[in-house]
Length: 111
Length: 110
Image (cartoon, rainbow over all chains, first blue to last red):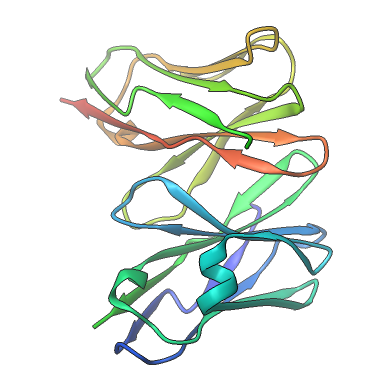
């Protein structure tokens, strides 16, 4: 099976704390996407990397998040100052051509 | 902005029935289409892809693509309670841009 690995699976932070989650893309995939999903509803696009370079991101990410792909085998998504509204499942996916695979996600709870 | 409209938002079918999910895209640059299924507490998993006009069948699942109308559908025959999940369609351009539909929540009742 194709594998996109996300760590940690669960993350609990207090308001104001910093959070970081990691994604190991499927080998050979050059595109990496991060999504936010609340209450098992629609996937909200956050940021997209191609060959480790950020090509598209929403304003929220520019303002409060930090996202990098320092290598083709590791990406990270951080929240500089967690807010209650950031509680969600954060999904990483990687793609190459017509293949798109997801990790199991990091569930962030902000208390 | 590229969009993929997915319908219905939710769907209930009896066990053994047929479930039909639909997506319509707004951009002819979309070349590849995928269907994903997400069970509670998990990440989405790829079900099947379709790139060419017509039907593609994999077991109880049949995807249909009509490029002229930018419409893709997924039909699940003999639906099982284990099919209850959130289903997403995804449209992908030749340049790797991926756009997801808003999801259809399917409930199959015994």
